Amino acid sequence: MKVAVYPGSFDPITNGHLDIIKRASKIFDEVIVCVLVNVDKKGLFHIDERVKLIEKVIKPYDNVKVESFNGLLIDFMKEKEAKVIIKGLRALSDFEYEFQMALMNNKLDSSIETVFMMTNAKYSYLSSSAVKQVAKFGGCIKGLVPDQIIPDIMNKINRG
Ligand code: ADP
Image 1 (cartoon, rainbow, N blue to C red):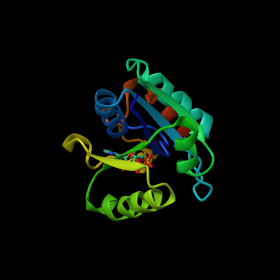
Image 2: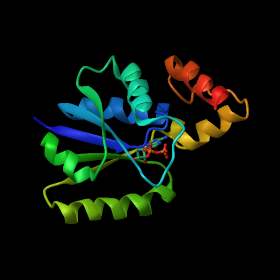
Image 3: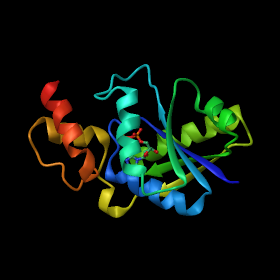
Image 4: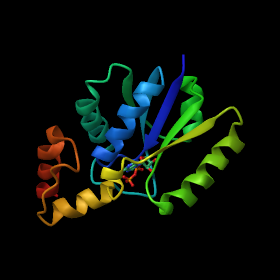
């Protein structure tokens, strides 16, 4: 069984992320979305809230599930017996960082492959931080994130 892990911060999940998930679910037997805890970054949503938002939007995909992990991605991969990391690539700016991460992960465990999927052109400008900025200043986030989580994002922003 080919298990792939799609890691990230997903603070919150966007249509760009969901597009990668959908496409990956057609290629692999199972896709595990992994919300990684980043001690250097304080997010808008708590890790458990991010997982809940992802759970809401992956329901249509039977072979996709979501978990969170506090630690090295490689250790999560071992736990799940997964050998493939999926990464989405947007502009050139993503390349250098992702290139470094892929080589580092391969150095830590040479049986791990990172597979890059090109962003859908529709979402190439989209990031979680851009969504948060737009929402914070009252802009419309329809089309940027799945419709069913728009109220969750607006509530969070308005409360915070
Ligand atoms: P961000 O906060 O920048 O949205 P994440 O850490 O949550 O990023 O992203 C997780 C993964 O999803 C990374 O591999 C990232 O390159 C990818 N990704 C993020 N946004 C998009 C997008 N719009 N299209 C394709 N891939 C994306």
